Amino acid sequence: MLIWKVISQILNVIYAKWCLQGCGSSPEFRVYLNDLTTNDFNNVFGSLPAFYTKLKEEKGSGFGPCFIVRTPGSF
Image (tube, rainbow, N blue to C red; front, side):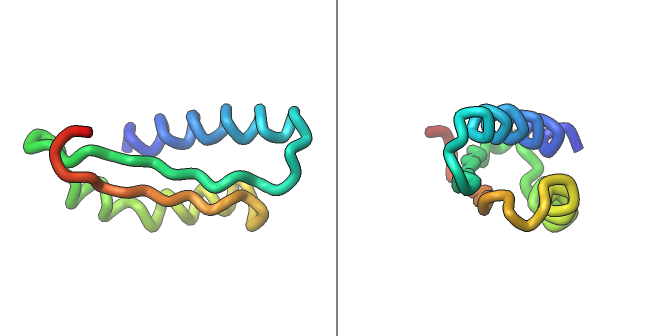
């Protein structure tokens, strides 16, 4: 799913920069998705467990927590 590829790429860039700066343990990540009428959040959040599994496999257990939240309407 495209949304998870985009989010994963953003997390990769942030994490790489964090590691280059030698900041220690991984930061906590928070991703906010706005729930508009054109979005299919049942499908998006149905695929969330697979995204978390893939993220853990790629980054390891030391990768900081990643919270993904659905917010109503627009920001």
